[in-house]
Image 1 (cartoon, rainbow, N blue to C red):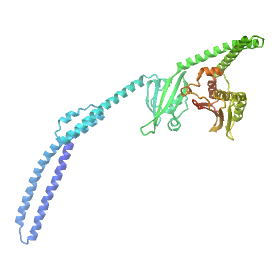
Image 2: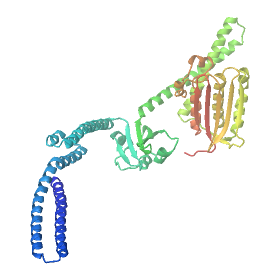
Image 3: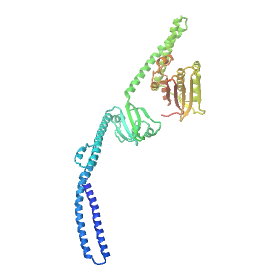
Image 4: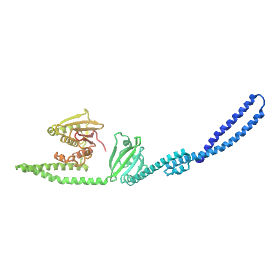
Length: 477
């Protein structure tokens, strides 16, 4: 490399010098010949002598210039070209991950400007090497973490091919060949999803799915990531083994169901005896005691009934019907059933419905229970003379019912947990109102069984908005 550059410099200077010397010689010779023609008498001998002398001068100049060129080229090569060449080689070695000591090059250089350039490059080199070592260290750390994680991680590029997969993902999904595509991986576990849906839907954030694969329960989360330009770059998939959690949850549900069955008979007996005793003539204090017994027994009976209802959904023992009905008529029927409560709290209720709506296909009695539950909550937790509005419309193949109120609202930190069983925002207030903390859990289970959804938004002091969606046609699974 060094010899090539040195040779190129020498050849360039030599050719340039030869052009100047030879061109000047020929110009002088032609000038002499023109002078001979203009004089008018014969001076050929004198001209030939001058031409010969000129040729000797050209040859001598050529030799001297060649020597000068060699000296200059050697000097330039040593002072400028060689350091820059070594600089370029050092840059290549740095890019390949090698550590380079620029100070050795700097000590061999005498040119002040080149030394200044090397000094600046030396600082950049040290910083670059430090950054590369740090990046390499972090890369190794991440690699070790991914290798030893119990959760599976798969990274797919835009084309849907695997760019990274850790051992846990291979074990959980039984993947042997890393050349599998996105569709091949999830088709194997009977999960119907495509990478374009995740990457290019505008309203997409993330998507979670729970599946049972070879008697192992997996929670799979899909997350799209972007490049520096903000464009979709690929999809990361996180696979978590939740088999133990599912087993413990099933054990808890079975325990609650068994206890509920055992409690149902004695509670019914307590209610019966309390109501019988209330029919007799007793003093005021005894009647108060019996009233409390009867009220609490009924509250316990409602709780047991709700628990038994949930256990039916958990064990898939609740058979859903596919009734076709008009949702507007059902909402009006629910409002009529709650007429006394509405009148007692002097609420104002308005129903706004689209003129033409398709019939809903779902279990009519179950959906009625959901609407009653939501409307009852709005009535309970809205102060007297409150406003409750019900909007009914259609979005794509779903009919929605949106119930809004200007009640006390739900704190933001509680919104994520309101569908949990027995979770109550204000336990004392809910108990006083006769709530069990299971109403919304049952509502969500009912809608899940009917391929519907429920969403709640709320702000403390301003009110709550509940939206349920129900399909207008049967979804075949």
